[in-house]
Length: 257
Image (cartoon, rainbow, N blue to C red; front, top):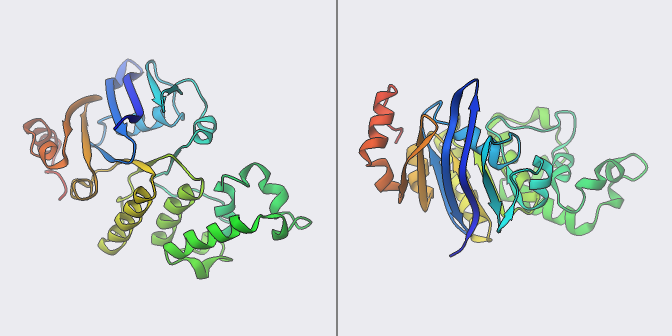
């Protein structure tokens, strides 16, 4: 199957230190791909470059064969590459529904008008309302439609961060540390949601420290250390790679299973 996303020879340095050093990866359409590595490996820097939040020093990123390296983050999102953040973002003094509306592909460019006191919800297309309701129901937040974001629990915020990205109708989702700081029950729910989204045709690239989670959900895995790619392949083969084992043990602990 053809690659949906290709990252070719990306490098980025900060003050003479190469955070990402000549890294190339491919993400096939319909796959769930993982990116692992210890703190300082360069994962987040690479993620930020791919999603347009940081400029690369050299190299190229292509989405469906189109070069997106020089595009701004919102331009990349408009082309179907959408990311989440490890710390959920949003508008605390807006409702769950309104926060979902911001990310909806149909309405986000007209959001202020659609929720103004004069426009009210009647300006929002019924299919958009229905899709938001369906997505909220899928994460058991259907009854929180009118709840302010600031009143949600931390687990619910984590799920909402994910489903808001889905609301934007992406071609590929970049998930930044979805397993960080979550309990076993929430992790199982996130895994179920990610698989469900993939089954609907959305490709996923996941960066996470939780190797057990990555091995459970991913079809293919890349491992980084000191800004370089050190291993790639099927999950179990990558975590058994001596270079990967040495990286985790040498940094102060074995891979989290």
